[in-house]
Image 1: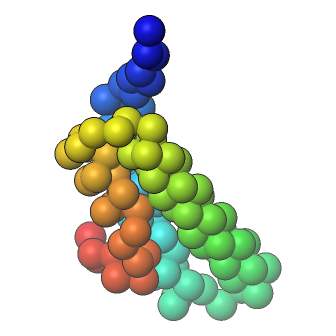
Image 2 (image 1 turned 60 degrees about the vertical axis):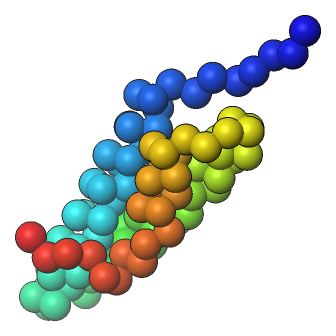
Amino acid sequence: MSTQIHFSDSLVGSLCREVDTIRNRHSYINRQLSLCIDGTLLIRLENEKNTLINRQKEILIIAKSININLHQDNISVKLLIEMSQRSLNTSNKN
């Protein structure tokens, strides 16, 4: 008997929303960096930016792992992979 891993669409959906939140926050931080003059705050903002970049990389690894384990095409997982591969530096400005 073969066992198949089923990943909930809510997990993939949550990760997609997190990537979107990361992109929006990254864009906001970039705008704030251009306005900020306080050295301590600049450091905090840069650190947060690096944390967001690292989290996006983690999500990409998770998405690829889910894709490998599914052994079938799943459009939502492919969307998650696409979203998490996009550069944060080209985020749309809101």
